[in-house]
Length: 258
Ligand code: ADE
Image (cartoon, rainbow, N blue to C red; front, side, top):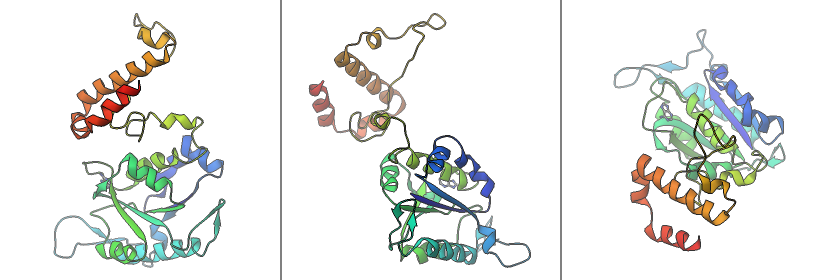
């Protein structure tokens, strides 16, 4: 998968060199390219922002540098160029615009994005990017305005780190054990609609605290049942909204299978 990230703070994306994403890059599963938006400015001060039309506080990112940056980056990868074994489609990239005004980033969206061969992220600072940029590219490409949560950050770089990590761990060959996302909270399937329950490892006693006996019993049916009860308990406490949204028929069916 190819990832392009355009930012005025390239150094903010340095964590993409470490841990899971860093390893995926080293292995050639991910081709990550970070670009400095100021490269596409032409004035002495490398200006990327200006005052908002209609007045108001803050600054708005100018359309010109974004347009030039996106044109050049998209041209560099279009026309069927081979990228790490993935043919980047002539249809161009999926463009992800982090913004608190976007649609919520969910595990479902992470899965959808992980199936795309090419993502371009446009993290903004200030009050956001001039609307015409989103309109212009939205006419030609799949543009997604995405929010990682109901809070406002100083810029879209941290949301990009969040989204890239969520997407990268879904790519084939990135996680050691392909089963490890099966029981993730929010994963479709086994524990659908429930948060993941608590986990334990050795030693069997720590500061006078033991491990639930069932987990040491070797009885797979009972362990599955216990995990499900704990997932339900945790979801009820931490995310009652998920319980309300869940389909009771799906719970009953799952329980009969255990
Ligand atoms: N930029 C600032 N806040 C954000 C958020 N919550 N999600 C995505 N991008 C953002």
